[in-house]
Image (cartoon, rainbow, N blue to C red; front, side, top):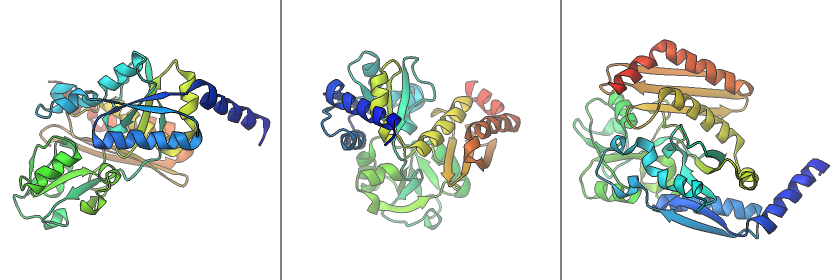
Length: 325
């Protein structure tokens, strides 16, 4: 071990033994969110065996109100605002999020410090009757609250019908099992994290249904001025995941991606190759843009920048202006 790595190691030991005796982890109160917080806790404990962690659950507005449309509750921010306030007010040291729930614009005081290794980013079909979307009869009802899923699946299977569904994974599965829906669509990662992977009948590929920005990734948000915490969570950051999700969020910022419009953004790395794809539609599905790009991973920043230029040329501003009307 060279001198630099020795110094880094000693600094991290200092943090775990002398600074952070009780790391306060903010999370939503759902079963999935608590799983994710405990996952981050276990990763940190693997790095710092003497670290003490306290998980602090919060009930967000999005959790409390299971009736109103998310776009009337501030979009994605409905699931993170309470956690972010806990960080800003120093009632928590880190907040653990599903990155797909994190708005592209963060409060000035905060930043995403680490993102753990991404799990399957795709969407999953859950059904007690059908094994594949192509097997579903005309008029079959699919439960989904996602405009992104509705529009992309609807384009592939126009004779299916869609009905809004709210609630956590367990609640949605109960509604499916009660017979209210023929199928529901959920994120693969969330279903698998809860040990319910056996209920997945079809994994819908990212080419069929471009995932939401950050889907399948768990992020750690901190205060920008807390350098010690930034160093503490650095070892559990997955570089490829962080870079891909950052690229997705850069595009999302350009698109003002929220829950208002059907928008999918997905980046991936395979060896030295970086790929980025986008799906965006207006509310009526009259104007649709699909675009993809690939290139050398080392040029990820420039590829993303030029991709945004391409999207502008394809007319994304027209779609975004329609949203604001």
